[in-house]
Length: 502
Image 1 (cartoon, rainbow, N blue to C red):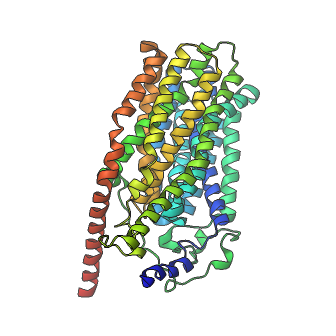
Image 2 (cartoon, rainbow, N blue to C red):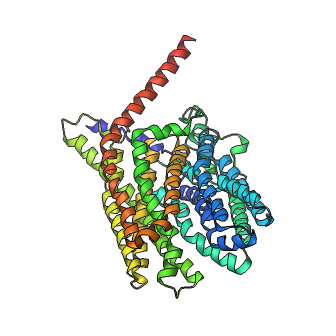
Image 3 (cartoon, helix red, strand yellow):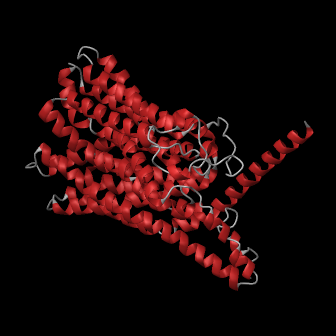
């Protein structure tokens, strides 16, 4: 029994990553700022749509098509960039995406108003650059954090990608009204360029197949100009540091065919569609329900749901880590006290023994009930034209519950497919964008056909219909993880046999 307690100690002397907690926070904060540009670039554009219709002398439908194409590229592009990042590194792909984004913004700021086709092309290019930063950030977190602390860092990271939809309309409305629609793209160009410079100066490469735990010195192209993060701990050799083999190019769409991953993506995708349906309809619903609001005031209403998301991001990350440690302590107690439990104490956190689905999803039913209940109440509150404080408070609660669900799902996805953090983030982005695009395209039609209250009842009902998937994930997840481990072990065994035969 004494040996079992003492065996884990060497692992404490050799952490998962060389970076201190403060350095990890810095890396994740930079990734979060980069991830902010994906939703911000989309949402900041919305207040300028009526102005663009007049400027380009075209129809609303044709200008709205630039929004649709953006969402399409927003879902597809990360599948390309994420796969490259899992093989060639996070740092060069991050900088490439931001460079594409900044250059496309220059083009959009200068596009002539008689060239609608160029507006469409540049919006697609803009989406290809900005949309991929979210998936790349998920890969960075998977590189530098282990499962016990990952939830906390995903909480910070998600502030950028998920608060962007709330800040975008406020910023876009102010810029379009004060400086004209071209100022929106100059703003995005300046912001993305500053982020690119910061990454070039200080962001280290984190891909474990290149740098291991961060101590292996990568080729010059992967090194920051100012190597201040982890500076005193870099310089290990391949013999001293365990480094996964360099990843081969993998088709990221294969991940969608993992049953447990696909079920999780569908479950969260419908909730994300509900979230986007709510945010996309705020301007229209509040202007009709509360006609005394100005455009600027309506833009400020987006801050309610953003505030709830900010609070949820900060709290839920800690809750995820606490739940992980609680399940870990229960398993360790069982290993010490239950003679029928044949898992050694030091092995309880290994992938084949630890119920990661249960540890992550213990709190999910609570968040889910809050989310769908508040969405229904929000719809009927607007239809009844109650005091504006009621829907705003409901937005705060909804934002809190929604971000908790999204963070929990994203953290579990990275746990399920280790070594492919960016690819799994891209798959998550693809499903979410596809369902969100459908929700945004039909929300106005639904409201006009059945009213606000019944619209949100139907949308919440679709989410409720997928709610059993929460428990399906916890039930079948360990089985499919075991099958993937077995296939991977067989492939490694075959490769070793081939090498020995040669």
